[in-house]
Amino acid sequence: MKSICFYFQVHQPFRLRTYRFFDIGENHSYYDEYLNKTIVRRVAEKCYLPANKLMLDLIKEYGSAFKISYSISGIALEQFTRYAPEVIVSFKKLADTGCVEFLAETYSHSLSSLKNEDEFSRQITQHANTIESLFGKRPTTFRNTELIYSDQIGNIVQGLGFNTMLTEGAKQILGWKSPNYLYCSARNPKLKLLLKNFQLSDDIAFRFSQHSWKEWPLTAEKFTRWLSKAEPAQEVINLFMNYETFGEHHWEETGIFSFLKALPKQILGSGKFIFSTPSDLFKTLQPISAITVSDPISWADEERDITAWLGNDLQNEAFDSLYSVADQMSTCSDPDLLRDWNYLQTSNHFYYMCTKWFSDGGAVHNYFNPYETPYEAFINYMNVISDFLIRVDDIMGKVNTKIDPIGIVLTKEKSKSAKSKPSVVSEAKVNKSKPIAKTVNKNSKGKPEIKYPKKTNLTGHLLQSLPATGIRAIAKAIGTPAFATALWNDKSVNVKALEQALGKKSQIEFRNILANEIAPSKSAFEKAHKLLLREIQKLETQ
Image (cartoon, rainbow, N blue to C red):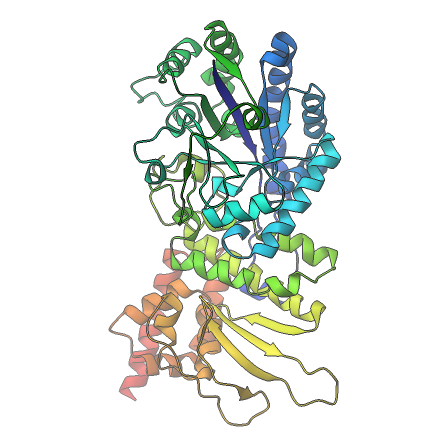
């Protein structure tokens, strides 16, 4: 008989409060406590608690014939402990049945697998330890954040002792093949791979309550018929989805809980299927073939790639800025810094900055998004990162890493003793760590000369041909790369006149306009833009 592998992802990020430019260096409170508590309590009452009770009832009814699996991020577990401890209790009851497998993932639900192997490994170990402590069994199956996988990532995961990994059944890696088999990694055949059947999974996760869907309404009987259409030789159908599907993305009124309650009876009653966990499948199935994944894949969009998180300049700039202190954080023991290091790595922060049109219409993405635009998400996050990097420097005391509000990372090397030479600006970086500055004595009276690269990104557009002293003035006056880029691309703006204008009283006006906004909105942009052009015209007529 074929196996049905039901897997559910449980995650909630720590959402950031509105963090303004003038908070940098003054206020280290980054998180919206009220919003986080409100959302976790709401989702607990609508989804986690009723869904867990239903799962427990189904296990009591069908015994070991009904099996499921979960991955719960460390960030979510922390919030449950703080805001909804009864959710932890309900998961422990499920664990005690022996019919539930808990998987490992990155503790922070992070994208560290794409950037830093040491940090990736640290988070996996931290998460596995947490799961073992809570539920009494160490995970042997791994599910990476957003189902991200590549041969390189798989090799790291297998090296950490995991024998099975979940990922997406992406068309670009399968071609004509079906996701309804067990596969293995081409680079490391010891690692077995379970691939999501995204068509059937998304029928429940995304389309269940969509009245415009031609298959609406979806019933347990209809879904079981679809499962039965799988080729006789196919061995497993992997149904992977967010747990919030039940009660939050699709409210109880849609019939989602009734569907879930009826589904095991229909599936088991057909006589064609059994329910299996990933560990069961590792023991009972053999890979039908190896698959090669050179470039990372994920669950997102038609492309099934990573561009939902790292697909534009905003995301890449934020990502690179955060991980610029990965080496320092690897030796950090300060609990507050480590907490923020974990929370700020959560993939949601980068997802909020996405400028793509999502294949699902953005419904699920926007539902939990606290920002009106990706630009607001970027500005708020970068303000937080600016403060975080200053704290890393102050506490670690070895490497002083600061980020300019428009995206320049300046790394200052401190001397080993108080009597040593003055500190110097040893390197300046824009976005993807491309060197743009020569070593300059910090205490030099002369203005440092910086050689800027060719246009490569939104920050680089603005920086070309500007002297070093103009950069900070523009940062203080404008406060956002998006605004700066628009000015740079506006042919009516004389860049040299721009720098001069920022030295006038208009600089204060600019700061007031933008500081008094929750984020630089379109209206704020227009006000500042008109003011700037007026000041430039005054200068040009003098």
